[in-house]
Image 1 (cartoon, helix red, strand yellow):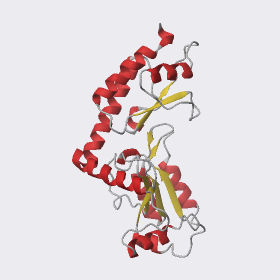
Image 2: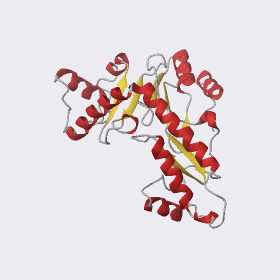
Image 3: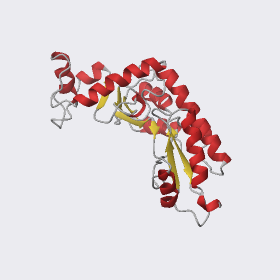
Image 4: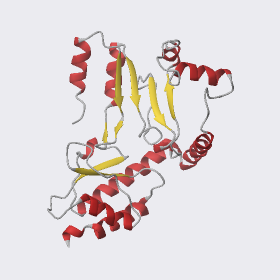
Length: 252
Protein backbone atom coordinates (compact mmCIF):
# COMPACT_ATOMS: atom_id res chain seq x y z
CA UNK A 1 0.00 0.00 0.00
CA UNK A 2 1.28 3.46 -0.93
CA UNK A 3 1.94 5.69 2.09
CA UNK A 4 -1.09 7.86 2.79
CA UNK A 5 0.17 11.44 2.56
CA UNK A 6 -3.05 12.83 4.04
CA UNK A 7 -2.67 10.52 7.05
CA UNK A 8 0.92 11.68 7.53
CA UNK A 9 -0.29 15.27 7.37
CA UNK A 10 -2.91 14.55 10.03
CA UNK A 11 -0.37 12.87 12.33
CA UNK A 12 2.04 15.79 12.05
CA UNK A 13 -0.74 18.24 12.70
CA UNK A 14 -1.89 16.33 15.78
CA UNK A 15 1.53 15.75 17.36
CA UNK A 16 3.89 18.75 17.46
CA UNK A 17 6.47 16.73 19.43
CA UNK A 18 7.48 14.82 16.29
CA UNK A 19 10.89 16.14 15.27
CA UNK A 20 11.95 13.92 12.36
CA UNK A 21 10.39 12.22 9.35
CA UNK A 22 12.17 9.27 7.72
CA UNK A 23 11.13 7.63 4.47
CA UNK A 24 12.50 4.94 2.18
CA UNK A 25 12.48 6.11 -1.43
CA UNK A 26 12.68 2.87 -3.41
CA UNK A 27 11.19 0.11 -1.26
CA UNK A 28 12.89 -3.05 -2.48
CA UNK A 29 10.70 -5.69 -0.83
CA UNK A 30 7.82 -4.70 -3.11
CA UNK A 31 9.39 -2.48 -5.77
CA UNK A 32 7.34 0.55 -4.73
CA UNK A 33 8.57 4.09 -5.30
CA UNK A 34 7.42 6.17 -2.35
CA UNK A 35 6.27 9.84 -2.61
CA UNK A 36 9.33 11.59 -1.17
CA UNK A 37 8.31 14.83 -2.89
CA UNK A 38 4.92 15.05 -1.17
CA UNK A 39 6.29 14.00 2.21
CA UNK A 40 9.18 16.43 1.79
CA UNK A 41 6.70 19.24 1.29
CA UNK A 42 5.02 18.25 4.56
CA UNK A 43 8.36 18.12 6.38
CA UNK A 44 9.13 21.62 5.15
CA UNK A 45 5.70 22.96 6.07
CA UNK A 46 5.84 21.56 9.59
CA UNK A 47 9.53 22.35 10.11
CA UNK A 48 10.66 18.74 10.61
CA UNK A 49 14.04 17.19 9.88
CA UNK A 50 13.63 15.01 6.79
CA UNK A 51 15.70 11.85 6.32
CA UNK A 52 15.48 9.85 3.08
CA UNK A 53 16.82 6.34 2.60
CA UNK A 54 17.84 6.38 -1.06
CA UNK A 55 20.00 3.27 -0.90
CA UNK A 56 18.47 1.74 -4.00
CA UNK A 57 17.50 4.88 -5.92
CA UNK A 58 20.27 7.50 -5.73
CA UNK A 59 22.14 7.60 -9.02
CA UNK A 60 19.33 5.87 -10.89
CA UNK A 61 16.42 8.24 -10.38
CA UNK A 62 16.76 12.02 -10.88
CA UNK A 63 16.15 14.00 -7.70
CA UNK A 64 16.79 17.58 -6.59
CA UNK A 65 17.75 17.11 -2.95
CA UNK A 66 17.30 20.77 -2.02
CA UNK A 67 13.97 21.14 -3.81
CA UNK A 68 12.71 17.99 -2.07
CA UNK A 69 13.56 19.57 1.32
CA UNK A 70 15.77 16.60 2.23
CA UNK A 71 18.04 17.22 5.21
CA UNK A 72 19.82 13.87 5.14
CA UNK A 73 19.99 11.55 2.13
CA UNK A 74 21.57 8.15 2.75
CA UNK A 75 22.85 5.93 -0.04
CA UNK A 76 25.45 3.33 -0.93
CA UNK A 77 28.53 2.86 -3.08
CA UNK A 78 26.84 0.08 -5.03
CA UNK A 79 23.20 -0.17 -6.16
CA UNK A 80 22.42 2.48 -8.81
CA UNK A 81 25.91 3.99 -8.66
CA UNK A 82 27.04 0.54 -9.86
CA UNK A 83 30.16 0.41 -7.71
CA UNK A 84 30.84 -2.42 -5.26
CA UNK A 85 29.46 -2.78 -1.72
CA UNK A 86 31.64 -1.46 1.07
CA UNK A 87 30.50 1.90 2.37
CA UNK A 88 27.46 4.11 2.71
CA UNK A 89 27.45 7.89 2.41
CA UNK A 90 25.26 10.74 3.55
CA UNK A 91 24.45 13.98 1.75
CA UNK A 92 23.44 16.37 4.51
CA UNK A 93 22.30 19.93 4.96
CA UNK A 94 25.36 21.50 6.59
CA UNK A 95 23.38 23.44 9.18
CA UNK A 96 21.65 20.25 10.34
CA UNK A 97 24.91 18.31 10.39
CA UNK A 98 26.67 20.97 12.47
CA UNK A 99 23.91 20.71 15.06
CA UNK A 100 24.89 17.05 15.59
CA UNK A 101 28.27 17.94 17.13
CA UNK A 102 28.79 16.09 20.40
CA UNK A 103 25.41 14.36 20.27
CA UNK A 104 26.32 10.98 18.80
CA UNK A 105 25.78 7.95 21.01
CA UNK A 106 28.18 5.90 18.89
CA UNK A 107 31.90 6.33 18.29
CA UNK A 108 32.02 4.72 14.88
CA UNK A 109 28.71 6.17 13.66
CA UNK A 110 29.46 9.78 14.63
CA UNK A 111 28.56 11.45 11.35
CA UNK A 112 29.66 14.93 12.42
CA UNK A 113 33.09 13.68 13.56
CA UNK A 114 33.58 11.81 10.27
CA UNK A 115 32.67 14.91 8.29
CA UNK A 116 35.06 17.12 10.25
CA UNK A 117 37.85 14.58 9.88
CA UNK A 118 37.41 14.56 6.12
CA UNK A 119 37.16 18.34 5.91
CA UNK A 120 40.25 18.91 8.05
CA UNK A 121 42.46 16.11 6.70
CA UNK A 122 42.08 16.12 2.92
CA UNK A 123 39.34 13.50 2.82
CA UNK A 124 40.83 11.17 5.43
CA UNK A 125 38.55 8.57 6.99
CA UNK A 126 38.48 8.39 10.80
CA UNK A 127 39.16 4.67 10.73
CA UNK A 128 40.51 2.21 8.15
CA UNK A 129 39.20 3.22 4.75
CA UNK A 130 37.86 0.63 2.26
CA UNK A 131 40.33 1.68 -0.44
CA UNK A 132 39.20 -0.86 -3.04
CA UNK A 133 35.58 0.24 -2.66
CA UNK A 134 36.53 3.91 -2.93
CA UNK A 135 38.48 3.27 -6.13
CA UNK A 136 35.56 1.30 -7.56
CA UNK A 137 33.22 4.13 -6.56
CA UNK A 138 35.37 6.68 -8.37
CA UNK A 139 35.37 4.52 -11.50
CA UNK A 140 31.60 4.00 -11.21
CA UNK A 141 31.05 7.77 -11.09
CA UNK A 142 33.12 8.17 -14.27
CA UNK A 143 31.02 5.52 -15.97
CA UNK A 144 27.82 7.20 -14.79
CA UNK A 145 28.97 10.46 -16.38
CA UNK A 146 29.94 8.65 -19.59
CA UNK A 147 26.48 7.10 -19.79
CA UNK A 148 24.95 10.57 -19.78
CA UNK A 149 24.36 11.08 -16.08
CA UNK A 150 21.48 10.10 -13.86
CA UNK A 151 18.79 11.02 -16.41
CA UNK A 152 20.23 8.65 -19.02
CA UNK A 153 20.69 5.84 -16.51
CA UNK A 154 17.14 6.33 -15.27
CA UNK A 155 15.86 6.05 -18.83
CA UNK A 156 17.73 2.75 -19.30
CA UNK A 157 16.49 1.34 -16.01
CA UNK A 158 12.95 2.42 -16.82
CA UNK A 159 13.05 0.78 -20.23
CA UNK A 160 14.50 -2.38 -18.68
CA UNK A 161 11.68 -2.51 -16.15
CA UNK A 162 8.92 -1.85 -18.68
CA UNK A 163 10.27 -4.51 -21.05
CA UNK A 164 10.55 -6.96 -18.16
CA UNK A 165 6.97 -6.36 -17.02
CA UNK A 166 5.57 -6.61 -20.55
CA UNK A 167 7.44 -9.85 -21.15
CA UNK A 168 6.46 -11.39 -17.82
CA UNK A 169 2.80 -10.53 -18.35
CA UNK A 170 2.97 -12.17 -21.76
CA UNK A 171 4.20 -15.31 -19.97
CA UNK A 172 1.25 -15.18 -17.58
CA UNK A 173 2.81 -13.50 -14.53
CA UNK A 174 1.12 -10.65 -12.67
CA UNK A 175 2.83 -7.79 -10.85
CA UNK A 176 2.26 -7.14 -7.16
CA UNK A 177 1.85 -3.40 -7.74
CA UNK A 178 -0.04 -1.28 -10.23
CA UNK A 179 2.18 0.27 -12.89
CA UNK A 180 2.03 3.80 -11.48
CA UNK A 181 3.55 2.61 -8.18
CA UNK A 182 6.55 0.77 -9.66
CA UNK A 183 10.10 1.95 -9.28
CA UNK A 184 12.40 1.29 -12.25
CA UNK A 185 14.74 -0.62 -9.91
CA UNK A 186 13.06 -3.90 -8.95
CA UNK A 187 9.69 -5.52 -9.61
CA UNK A 188 7.71 -8.01 -7.53
CA UNK A 189 5.68 -10.68 -9.33
CA UNK A 190 3.05 -12.96 -7.84
CA UNK A 191 4.04 -16.61 -7.72
CA UNK A 192 2.03 -18.83 -10.07
CA UNK A 193 -0.98 -20.49 -8.47
CA UNK A 194 -0.35 -23.80 -10.23
CA UNK A 195 -0.02 -26.54 -7.56
CA UNK A 196 3.08 -27.90 -9.31
CA UNK A 197 4.95 -24.61 -8.90
CA UNK A 198 7.81 -24.51 -6.40
CA UNK A 199 10.00 -21.43 -6.20
CA UNK A 200 13.07 -23.51 -5.34
CA UNK A 201 12.74 -25.52 -8.55
CA UNK A 202 12.02 -22.42 -10.63
CA UNK A 203 15.07 -20.73 -9.07
CA UNK A 204 17.27 -23.77 -9.75
CA UNK A 205 16.29 -23.95 -13.41
CA UNK A 206 16.98 -20.25 -13.90
CA UNK A 207 20.33 -20.49 -12.14
CA UNK A 208 21.34 -23.32 -14.46
CA UNK A 209 20.83 -20.88 -17.33
CA UNK A 210 22.94 -18.19 -15.67
CA UNK A 211 20.25 -16.06 -14.04
CA UNK A 212 19.65 -15.50 -10.33
CA UNK A 213 16.47 -13.81 -9.07
CA UNK A 214 15.61 -12.65 -5.56
CA UNK A 215 14.50 -15.72 -3.60
CA UNK A 216 11.83 -16.09 -1.01
CA UNK A 217 8.74 -14.27 0.13
CA UNK A 218 9.56 -10.90 1.70
CA UNK A 219 6.23 -9.09 1.57
CA UNK A 220 3.03 -10.60 2.97
CA UNK A 221 2.09 -11.74 -0.52
CA UNK A 222 3.53 -14.83 -2.18
CA UNK A 223 5.89 -13.15 -4.62
CA UNK A 224 9.37 -13.20 -6.07
CA UNK A 225 11.36 -10.20 -7.22
CA UNK A 226 13.51 -9.36 -10.23
CA UNK A 227 15.95 -6.46 -10.21
CA UNK A 228 17.08 -4.74 -13.39
CA UNK A 229 19.80 -2.30 -12.34
CA UNK A 230 23.53 -2.59 -12.98
CA UNK A 231 25.06 -3.32 -16.36
CA UNK A 232 21.77 -4.63 -17.68
CA UNK A 233 20.55 -3.78 -21.16
CA UNK A 234 17.70 -4.70 -23.50
CA UNK A 235 19.46 -7.85 -24.71
CA UNK A 236 19.84 -9.04 -21.11
CA UNK A 237 16.12 -8.61 -20.44
CA UNK A 238 15.32 -10.56 -23.61
CA UNK A 239 17.70 -13.35 -22.56
CA UNK A 240 16.16 -13.46 -19.07
CA UNK A 241 12.63 -13.75 -20.46
CA UNK A 242 13.76 -16.59 -22.71
CA UNK A 243 15.31 -18.35 -19.71
CA UNK A 244 12.13 -17.86 -17.66
CA UNK A 245 10.02 -19.36 -20.44
CA UNK A 246 12.35 -22.37 -20.49
CA UNK A 247 12.22 -22.67 -16.68
CA UNK A 248 8.41 -22.72 -16.48
CA UNK A 249 8.25 -26.48 -15.94
CA UNK A 250 4.72 -26.32 -14.48
CA UNK A 251 3.28 -25.29 -17.85
CA UNK A 252 4.64 -28.29 -19.72
